[in-house]
Image: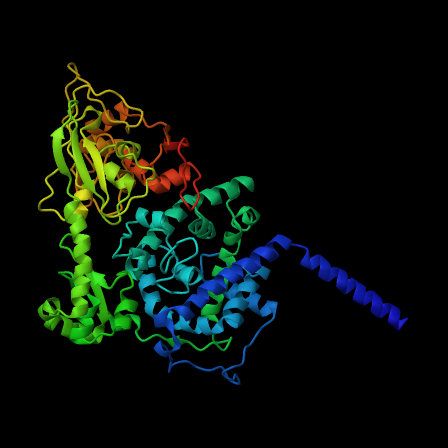
Amino acid sequence: MKISLFHRVCTILFLLLCINNSVHPAFARDSRSDKSSVAEILDSLVYATYFKDEYFSSSSKTQDRAGFTSNFVPQFTDSVYASRIAALDRKTPFNLVYNEHVRGFIRVYAVDKRNSTAKILGLSKLYFPLFEEHLDKYNIPLEMKYLAIVESALNPTAVSRAGAKGLWQFMYGTGKMYGLESSSFVEDRYDPYKATLAASRHLRDLYKIYGDWFLALAAYNSGPGNVNKAIRRAGGTKDYWAIWDYLPAETRGYVPAFIAVNYIMNYYREHNIRPVEPGYLYQDIDTLRVSKMLSFEQINETIGVSMQDLEFLNPQYKLGIIPAADYTPNVIRLPRRFVSQFQRREKEIYAYKSKRVLEREQLLARLQSFEASSQPVVSQATPDGQVRKVHFVRPGQDIGMIARFYRCEPSEIVRWNNLKSTVLVSGQQLVVFAGNGGAEKTVPAPVAAPAMVQLQAPIQIPVPAAPAPSSLSAPVAAKEPSPVRKPERKTKKIEMHRVERGETVASIARQYGVSVEDIAAFNGLKGTMHIVPGQKLKVSGSSAEKSSSRRATPVKEKYHKVRKGDTLSSIADRYGVSVGDLAEWNDIGKKRAIQPGQRLKVASR
């Protein structure tokens, strides 16, 4: 009888185990994959030069838990984990929950990769004050600082297999949307300050779309297009766990990892994890403006700041060169104890020349030669009134940027130059024709302005009295004579806006609560409504002016057929909207991929 009862119990337990393991077979695979991805990110700290053990030291303020030896690894029951996460949930706007997915990631951070977690805890003292400052500015919950741990393990030079870079893992296209520069010398995605500002703005924009922080996190990881698709497939519900089954595999583990990081950053002492601190903390660093070109070697060989410290504190300068310019002053971040020396010996530092410094200057000179030769060379006019120019491609330029500058189509540049690909290389010569399309184009003389500004300089386009309508042009208010009714004289106070890098006409319109057409009418913007940093725009005017512009230019849905060479950025500029708007209206995923012949919505009701 006893044996029979024993066999029954064993049989029941075996069946229950089988049922439990077969509930989510797909997640079991996805979870292993996601935890493997997190482990790779944590391992990146091991291989990064500055993050080797010799650059970290144990914190003297760390309090050991009674009875824990240094190598003891505590683990707890599900009920303990659940109660602790419930306590965190009561103090945050995030809906923190505990489940088997979260438990798997807690094990990664608290057991499998606990040494890396100890370094992350130390690095948090360097980066979290910066994160909290920007998150608070944009009304984002401060717990969002833990997202950078999920993304990069607080490694400012982390690079994913997909090409995302930096603490906040921006893809190239998304970084461009938020003003992050990527060139041969500078990678703003590696800059902790600029990338944190961009991430704060991006997260704020995503929350405005979904009204839910977990959905904003999912969109940050996979793009709004994938989240919108998952919401539709789930019947329209806007709840992360309700759409979980319909999200990409990587995104399914994203929020559980975020919850696990929230947990471990608050309960690391209970897990006997002892933080190790990096060489510098947030309060040990100061920022200085650089007035001229400067290399890390000049600073290292004059005032003695180590090359490792310079590279760690200034990861955005990929080649150790700071290409300073008057119009966009760059900065150098130094250990605070060296700041007074730098200020006192600044002229000496700039003047210092060694063999290594001269090599750096020669490298920069090659870039400057490209910039100098990139001034358009004007030849004789063609019989149809167009002006033939030769453009020298500069580092960081793509065919869409060049096409926007010359007010032509990327496909036309491809045709004029018999290009087999739209991929350009620095120093390449391109033939372009100004004056295309019947409009006379006046390009400002690029003598006084630096090279990067010249690419974005405003182009004055005299428009004929009765221009022919074009399906590729943004709607423009038409001026209609009104001999009967006198114009209204009632006016409002004129308000001006100075354009900042990364802004579009659409984003400025949303900021001031006016329409894109209003701003176009106030400032005489035509066609692509191109604006440049530093430009001043009128953003409010007379009520009559507003009403007439709205009557003349009703907002309606508009579509664009993608041509060869088009990019989301060039299409967004053409129609005066943001890349984010295009991605949302057309359910475009994180990779921002579009194909020739594709039909895109470029204006919404």
